[in-house]
Image 1 (cartoon, one colour):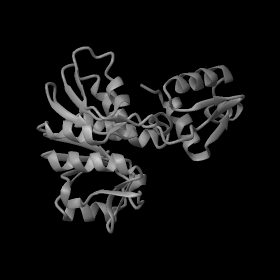
Image 2 (cartoon, rainbow, N blue to C red):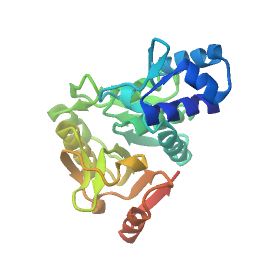
Image 3 (cartoon, rainbow, N blue to C red):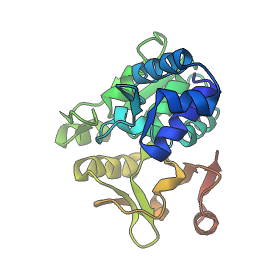
Length: 248
């Protein structure tokens, strides 16, 4: 759990992409020793990269790098969703940085069964020995640690999926929900076809953006979990379509 000061550091990095120990010390009114301890902790959590005299926001497309972007927004969504999961439930978590934080919150629920197509998400439960973790097979994508391909689709076909939590890279009224990765998009679409109850999980910055590949349309899902600052026009559109909008 991050403290208020560490969350502020991530907010500053999310805005500026780079910061120094001295600037943070002045801005947050604490010693440089405390700031260095915070930066070292945040680096160990995979939320930033330490450089001489400060820190930078991680670059790249892997989950470690994306966790620090809009961290507070994603964490609020994760906490809200975790409060809706009961002990003993079985759910499927696909991928995405907000879903990683969701998984970390679920670690606090001792007896839960998690099916996932993402190895990084599965590893969040390594200290919860009472949780049942089902990793669906497939081709391993090194950056995102997501499993894709024919074997993954075959695994999904064998499952009765009641609740599925899907990450996205964008949504527009014209294109629906989209992802940058066409292989991951194929798996997400397959999960959505099989699941009875589909939750799209994304911070509010993704709405109004478009990824490379279509995943599904609004009519294919039942819930959207995002932030309370979501554009009111999108909120109205979703509710008029009968979607359960979960705001955090």
